[in-house]
Amino acid sequence: MNSSRPTVIIGAGFAGLFTALHLRHQQDLRSIILIDPQERFVFKPMLYELLTGELSEDAVCPTYKELLQGSDINFVQDKVVAINLQEKRLKLASGSDYIYDHLVLAVGSIQGYLGTEGAQKNAFAFRTQENAIALESQLRECLQRASQTDDETQRRSLLTFAVVGAGPTGVEMAATLADLLPYWYAQLGGDIRQIRIVLINHGKTILAGDVNAGLQEEALHAFRTRTVPVELILGVGVKAIAQDHLEYQPANSTEIKTLLTQTTIWTAGTAVNPLIQNLKSQIPADHLDKHGLPLVTSTLQLLDFPEVFAAGDCANVQPQTLPALAQVAYQQGASIAHNLIALAKGASPSPAHVSLRGTLMKLGLGNGVAKLFDKVQITGKLGDLIRSATYLEMLPTPLHDFKATTEWLKEETFHRYHRPKMKPETTAKQLLSSVEQ
Image 1 (cartoon, helix red, strand yellow):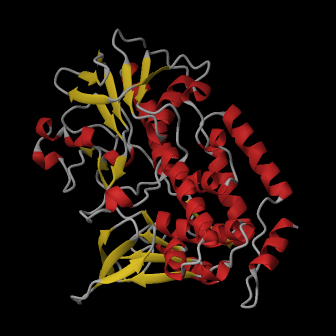
Image 2 (cartoon, helix red, strand yellow; image 1 turned 90 degrees about the vertical axis):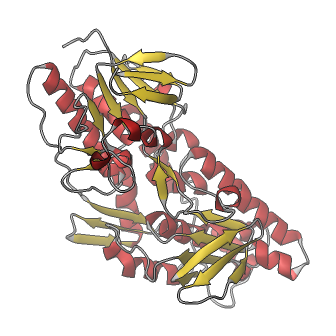
């Protein structure tokens, strides 16, 4: 089963990491090189828990050194800058290069900004550990400054938080902030009724065209019942984002409106990874989709280069496109590993069977919804517990799973956050008193 050339996996997210781990779990002895520019794995579905402090950095973003300990998987922290599919060769930013036997592309997508002026410079993304840390710093700074200024216009701008994009990330972000920010602001002695959470979307509904579309009503109910209700601005196009405001235009209107805010969080859209973009000249145009993603067979192999597998949201699986979900990439990693082992034994690869096990959403602190196999929907605290338990079960190794689960159970036991019901006459002092009990 050994090959003189290694199996190289580019990208150590869900698809890439789990391909490597499944190969080792199934006692595959080939040389495996796993390449990623980051030191840490990012468990993206639980970045909210990193932002809120419900889980630690080590739980949500463990190091690859920890995750791969004892696996004999060669992790290379570097960036792949070029791939030659014909020569089966790739080049790294450090100048190193590798010739592979099989290649797995699992680099994911990157944040897209839809050409919106100032978005990349002035808006906060939420895809990485660094994004979460930067956003937390921004949120706390705005609240601190708002609690100290006597300028009403300045305070209004500091306490208005805009989320652009009403897909799952935008919805979860808005609901989380609507509970979290009042908690933080009350600790500073501020009036939580001055906080505004505004969710802005190009479409006229939230979660439109998404696998979570069936959770629209539950999400809208959560928005209305948060500590601070979430406001919706729908059916508009965001035209520009500056440090202290954003501009948007309603559909069928020439009027440009302005929202004063010093925090815009961008969750709308993705773009093709540059490494995948650079493969376009090596792959026939009719074997790329309209976005430039390579088409792959049901066995997750490139049409023209069967020694190359691709998964996650850097490939378009034929004949049916799959949603860019962690549970999909997780299962695709297992399928790629199975097929690599089959090929090494001289057998034929098998189609990847991916089953959507349901949808999970965080809709505030201690509040969530779990729709299991499109049959059973559980909401509230229990829905949030099921969401957390399900994601913790997906963590990459049993040791890390145990550590993170233990930490989460401690959090649930000692109740770090108590989200009080907000009444019109509630004062910041009363809120602070309630959350400290």
